[in-house]
Length: 471
Image (cartoon, rainbow, N blue to C red):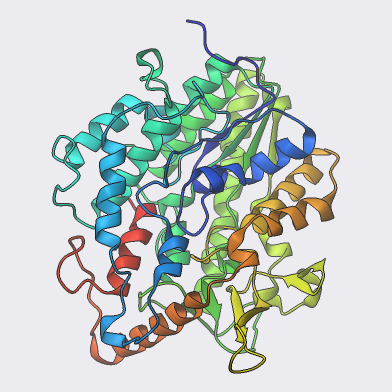
């Protein structure tokens, strides 16, 4: 079978950090500003990112900007109309028409993917999953909050793995596309959705190598993937495996106070979550140590499989833990770990914050940069600037030429969240902090199990969107 666009310079497989998800959102714009897309652009390589005709199920930043603050009341805080927007978006995805001009993409990573999805998930299996979750394709079908993660992955994968809905490619996995197209360089970035994401988003102690009921144990999945990578055609000259990042460095885990012991604060609370979870510094240090150990084991599995197949020379690793640790200003309080972009803009890994200023009562208010900038609204996925930083670090590791300052400034300028910080975001963050405190005192905030019922508040909507990355 002849595949379209054979022998690309670069292909990418993996999950949300490879696909370019920002603020829990997967869209054409987000994918176009992923770190692999930045890298390819800087090298002058052709690189086709997924051109989603609409965001997958929702656009969190759009919802934040829609928050009505006039006549604001705690009891009535909600994203008005989110249920209708969700159902309309879902109905358009369920229409099942081909909506891309590209027969395949160079970035076939899928946000929310598990390790096993790289060698098992196809557009056809995703289509079947969508039908099962929606009662055969009914956009008004009853959905549980827990089903959102599976539905989000399935819709995204069905489009990303077969954008023109060609029957010839309906059974292709991410790795099948790699085997058939034979890229010169392959990037693999996977493993965050087996518990690591949940630690960072909810501030709760969870295993970072959780078992999946379909694919089995985490390390069984990695062993299978390592073997598949080792057996790829020799035309794939370089395989770049990106290891797991330092979860303690994510902006969503806000350090409480200025005291630091061995690089950790006393406690951490989640910022952009209604969760009442909290981690001590020793908890987080222990989890980060588990990440280091997991990275060592991934490295050993991939190297071992490649050595057995005689393909070890083409494998290289990007130490995402060291990379994120190098810019961990939040925990280190070391100013050298901030990044000065010029023009008064200094970004770091604290949660995004801006201040509203008004020169006079009649003047239009403006937003002044205060802190953060490397991670987006969810406090987990990078901003456009954060992805640009990752692209620069990978290019440095691979010995690829690039203009670091220009790449970073372009990444910042092209992310609207950074150039036009919504004032509503600060309102939401403060409201969530109040809801968490009330819940700790009175157990007022319960987890809703169904979508968009009567009285669905802000916290319920955020749980729904966050669930897209918890399967």
